Image (cartoon, rainbow, N blue to C red):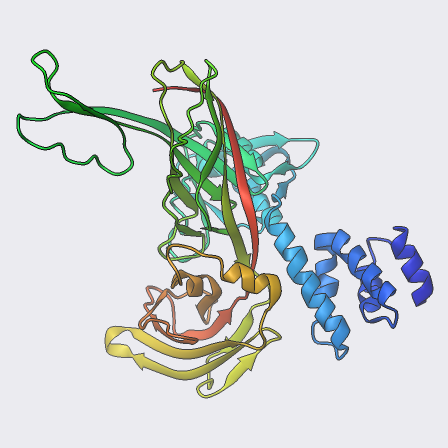
Length: 457
C-alpha cells in the first residue's frame, strides 16, 4: 500500500482495523499529513494498536519511535478510565473455572479462599449475558451465583504484596447503595448524624467546639434556660474504589455538587469548603489499600425530610497501573552492571547475603533514560498530602526466586533520590534470582457518583 493511497484510506476510515502495522509504518512517512492521519487512526484503534506500536519502540527511525511512544502513553492512559469487560457465557460450569475465566478476561489475578472450603470444588454456576458486562457488574453477578464475598481492604492474600484479589466462599454478597463509573465503584457506606448540647457551669467560659462540627451560638443564661451551646455533626461516609488492576491517588477534595431531601431542601454545606482527608490507594502496595475512605460534610435542615432524594459528588484522582514488558534484571553476576530498556536504566551496585538473619540486601540505582515530559510529568507532580511514597517503589519493583515466586522486601533506607536499598525478607521463597522493574502509566480523571432515595438518620 503506497503512502498516497494509505493517507486517503486513513482519512476516510477505510484502513482495516486488523492491520495496524500498516498504520505504524506510516508514522515515519515523508508527508506530515500522512503521519498525522496514521496517528489518528491508531488512536482510534486503541488497545488493538498497542502490540504493533510496542514492536517499533526500538527501530532506528526517530519519528516512528517518538510517535509510537506518545501513542502508547495516550492509549494506555485512556484505557485506565474504561471498565474491563467480562463476557458471561457459563452454563453449569465449576465455580473455580469461572473465576479463572474472570482473571483471564480482565488481567486481574483472582483466587477463592479458603482454597479447601467444603463444597467449593463441587459448586457449579450458570452465568449468561448477551453482551459483556463491566467488571463490577459482572463481579456482582458472580458473587450472587457463587456465594462469594469480597472486601476492598483485603488485597494480598496470602502474601500482602502479592496482587491477588481474594473472593471468600460461602458468605454471599451483601451490598448497600453503589454508583459505578467506568472502572470505579463508589459505595455509600453510611450517614452519620450527631447532636450535642453542652451545658456551661456558672462563670466558666464556653470552650470552642471540635473541628468539623456545626455550632449554634451559646444561649444566654437564665433561670428557665441554662447557658449552653449546641453542636451538630452530619456527614456521608463514602468509599471509592478502582478495579483491582489499578491504583488510585486522590489529588483534590471530595466535592458534593447536589444533596437534596424529599422536601426539596438542600443539605449542602455552603458557609465554607470543608476539606476531606487525602489518601493514596494502591493494589500492589504493602500498606495501602485498594480504596479510599472519605467523609462528605452535610448540613441538616431544621425540619428534615425522610430521605435524601439525590446525592451527587465528584473526586479528582490519578489512576495508574503497571505497564507490561518489565525490565528484567538477572542477579547472577549482576553486581556493578547496568540493565536498560527504552525508558529506564537499573544498575545493581551491591548484593549482600546475611545467612544468619535469613536476609539479603540489594542496592540499586534507578534512573529514567530521558525526561518523560508533557502529560506524564504533570501527572507525576500533581499535589497530594502524603508527598512521595515508598509504596510507589513497591508497585514498580518485584524480586523473584528461581521458581518465579515474589519475595517480600522493604526499603531499608529512605529511598533517597534514585538509589534504593532493598532488604529481602523471604518466608518459604528461595534465593533471589531476578528483579523486575515495571514502568507505570497514569491518567488524571474525576470520579463522579450519584445516589437516590437514601434514608436520613
